[in-house]
Image 1 (cartoon, rainbow, N blue to C red):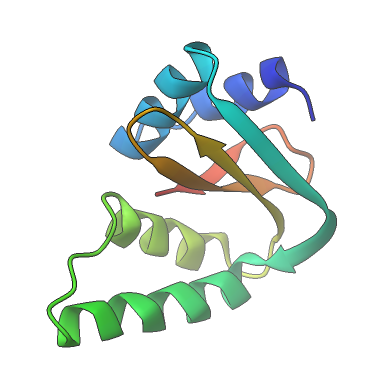
Image 2 (tube, rainbow, N blue to C red):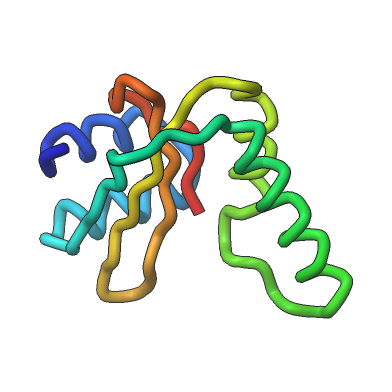
Amino acid sequence: MNRDALQSALSQDGCISARAALAELEASAEFEAFLNQTASAQQLWEIWSWRHEVMLDTSVTPRPGLAEAITKLQAAGTARVYMATVTGSQRRFILVLSQDLTQCVACW
């Protein structure tokens, strides 16, 4: 996956985290797409919704955008997805991309 394709996928997602990740990417942030294995959005939803719940129960502040990303992962159901990261000057973003790599399913 190249930078242009990732920028295109992020530009289609209007959430605050995706816009921030796109801005970092446009400012030459490092990125990595993990294309060697897909997961189902449902599996990621199960993992991250549990982690989010634990964070709230233990008074740990969740990453910005995590609650919205969890909702989007649940809505994606059993769709196969890939993960990627964008490491910017302010923070590291976790992205979930559609199987065809054209859409950002969730970002936090």
